[in-house]
Length: 344
Image (cartoon, rainbow, N blue to C red):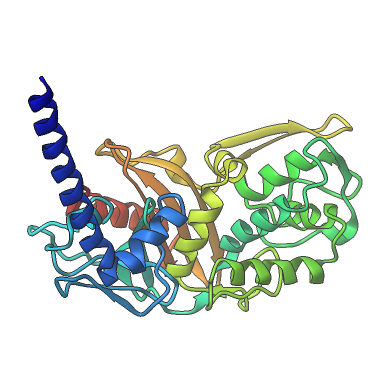
């Protein structure tokens, strides 16, 4: 019995030492240090900070300026890395999109799966409201707090649901901003924080810096200005943060929202996201998104999509030609990503 135990301990010890040495070899690789340690630090997200990272077998993974890890070009990566990085199929086909810029990233590790003009800086219209929502949540006066609409809240562009004197809750303003993309409600939401619009916009730009969005800038919180700019890659990165927030995610998944003012006026709005009512086929689900349109930005959409295996991607389509095409192109980009990549 003692001999058997000794043999068992010897074999177990050898296995442990061997495993440790194998892990140490992987740890010593530049790729692991650049990416896997960040994966642990960011609770499951691989975020790159350098221009490139190379494994011990000279496999290269590029990192975009927006801090998004591009898919690695060589499949012979250490096994520990392949657990987290999607691999492009040998049978992958090229994708053409009529969007001026289009991007798909894997939500779990922010690997770039598709990239067309992803670094092109351009107006983003009401996609700005995702950043507005993130900053607002840091200054929320309380969901059930009442707010009386003021004349200075009014903004043209799109349908207006609330008018001077209407009394509503902060929750109603938040949902109007994200569900109906209501510009007037968005300004009222900003004003409800007690910050001036200049102070609020400053915090939006500070938040952009915090998220390492180097090519993103805001001059107002609604998106009417052509000086509210970003790139498809940075919109994807912003959306990872915004759509991972429960309040924002739930609001953007509502196909309609109904409420009453304190005066008893009943209001019902439909989402500007048509995919919520016309879900894509092939098992795809839409788990939130945001639309945008101005003449300078064109028709824009960013959405969070999930397939039948619950893999999720963020798909972005900027500067599309018409109202419907932004949804068609974003859906096509997401479908292409799921069809042409595999996750280990």
